[in-house]
Amino acid sequence: MGRPSQLSPIRTGTNRREFFKRSGATTVGIAAASPLLATSADAASAVFQHGVASGDPLADRVILWTRVTVASVKPLVPVTWVVATDPGLRNVVLRGATTTSAARDFTVKIDAAGLRPATTYYYRFTAGGASSPVGRTRTLPVGAVDRLRIAVLSCSNHAYGYFNAYARVAERADLDLVLHLGDYLYEYGAGQYGSLRTPEPPTEMVTLADYRARHAQYKRDADSQAVHRQHPFVCIWDDHEITNDTWKDGAQNHQSATEGDYPQRVAAGLQAYYEWMPIRQVEADPRKNFRRFQLGDLVDLLMLEQRLSARSQQLPAGGGFAQTGAFTDASRTLLGAEQEAWLFNRLQTTPARWKFLGQGVMFAQVKLRGAANAAGGGVFFNSDQWDGYQPARDRVYDVLKGSSTGRPVDNMVVLTGDIHSSWAADLTQDPNNPDTATGGYNPATGQGSRAVEFVGTSVSSPGVDSDTSGSTAGFLRSQNPHFKYINLHRRGYLLLDVTPQRVVGEFWHIDTVASLSNLQTFAAAFEVQAGTNRLVPSAQTTPRANAPLLAP
Image 1: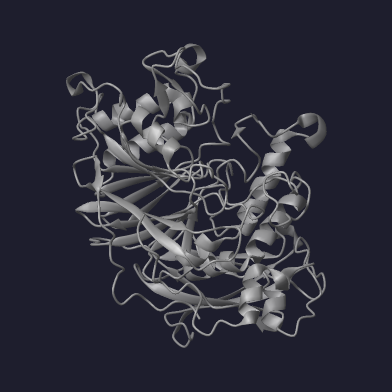
Image 2: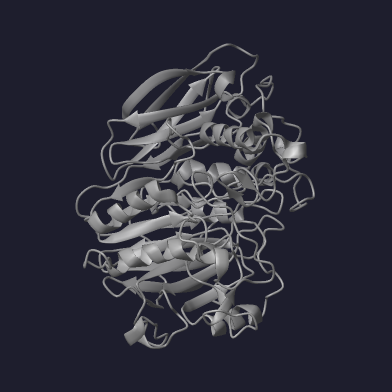
């Protein structure tokens, strides 16, 4: 399973005050849905209770975020900000002023433009006579890029456990970017899905006030603040940012009779999301937040929206489903025609070496072969994944194979969250057919694979915690030969090391979410070499030398 990491998760000299801050002891009783009286002796902590964050970086700009807690309700609260090239903020390159108000829950969002590419910057806000913690961010590169380091996170359930994975990622000074692939927060009330920490509000979030309060609670978490303070995030929502198993016109966990109008709930959840996350606002239709990030000539990162803008309703799966009947309906979609056209065009035309898809639900098929009701060789499990939308998935494979253009697309890497477990897979349209001459797949050589997928485990949400021996994971691998690695019971994060020659995905696992912990383990690594479209085992990579200083 690997060795415990030697990274120091809490700085030398961390005292009891800092430990209690991480455990949430200093935030008891704070209700941050509305501005509060700043009575703390530490003015910065009182005014900037939710920390700072950055996100959606481009080569010349990045979103800077904070939230101001003011001494009394005011129509407008003035806020100033600076950006510098050093953590002491002596070499200031940008400064500005803005205001915030109750209309946006006193959050602040700046699109800081005029920056240099591939450069680390430090920033700070000032309001109410206090200064925020210093944040650290980084712009995207342009031109030739020889290496990138990216952390991948998903499924952070505050009620279910501590965000130790966030703390470990915060320590990594050599990261260019952090991706959060959804379920950044959960909608459930107290005791409904985790009971280690009590959610705010204690009821399921349905209204705008509910969503704002829950975001505020998550942003008060010390480990959440640490990872946001040190790294720029690129995020996309999954379902729990609104409610479980969302689709275009409804959700499994929405009851109109008691929870009101579904579109109003979506609008409330998205308003709070855009207010509280370091992400650019989508004005025309906030649901259509699919977007592209160009990391020089090395990576074209395509972030997919798979829940609110176009998804067809999930079909019932029961204990498993055969790919027959309605499941073969080509009109059913995850992405919708507009997003599909955008995705296919980018895959076919990007000059970047690697095409990364940041998305929520597993692309690779998962099924049992030879089941009693099997059609086409097996029975599938999860109709919420691409398995439930196989004709839509086939259209992606058509692009990868160049079926209509005669120009196959290589070097696609799918990055996924959602299922609270770690998986690495070759992506092939027919993995249970061993005849590669007829479009099948050879698990020994990887021949027939058209792309690869890394599924990162959750920050804190539970997996199959009983599978400590790996027997269930082993059985799934025996039924699905395209999976090279499955771990169902450990929490943590995925670390990507990218060069023009290969992409390495490292699975890092933490020891617990039940308490604060400094321990993490390197579990496994797999790489895809350029032009091969298949995974092979890999060694742990080394951190980048001379990484920029972390924020103080």
